[in-house]
Image: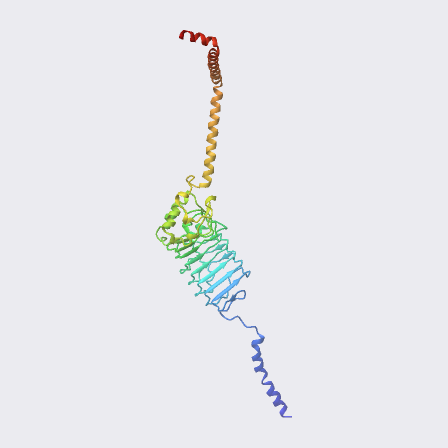
Length: 355
């Protein structure tokens, strides 16, 4: 009788310890500080975080403090808000890639909280508005990628203000249908400018002079996949290209798109005398306009000539009548002489005195 309570008491002493051991399994573990947010995943280590094709409408809140590269692709962010990373700064983030995220607006001080950022990729976003101080809190920003990001609206002037105080080394503007060199977007000290797959036909002398200005003398251009027009207006650019081929790393791959006889011809193999001059300005349109103008002038001359003929129809008629009478008299004289020469009697009479 006295041992039963002792056994029950001994068994009851193990239950509290067993409950404490199973408690972590019953309660869901909390997210570890500095771990990956739920819609994203870390590659190898928390230093590389990717959020690919997740329908995010705002930037993830809980990001690892040690992240170096952050990639958010295929979301619907719409706006890169002011101080987007200020609540939880990422002091070691060096590369921020925001591609295909439908970003239309970049607000003031959008990069606050990213003091070590060196590369920002906003490619494939329909940018409509960029604040003047959008990148002001990124003093180490050296590479800005804006490929196919300037097609939705004219934001070149806004970007020029936003890039004015930066120390960029590389700027990518590929696929933006640019027809001229965006000189306003070139901050002093820029070393590489990617203008591939645009709508450039040539670089005109003022643009070439801007490339020789202070701060841009070492700038290298990439111009592949542009519809270069090999006409007379290309001569200044061709001379500049041959004088400094190192400034265009893909110079040997540049080809002519127009005119048809030179289509596909390598640019550096062209001789200046081969480039056809039509007129100053835009060659194709002005050549057509010159033919039209020449036709109009000929039509006016023909109309004036017909009017002169009409106004002098009586004098012309009189002149034609006199000419016809003169021709008739002349023909009658020839006819008379022919008949005299053909009559043998006249011939013998004339020849008798000689006997």
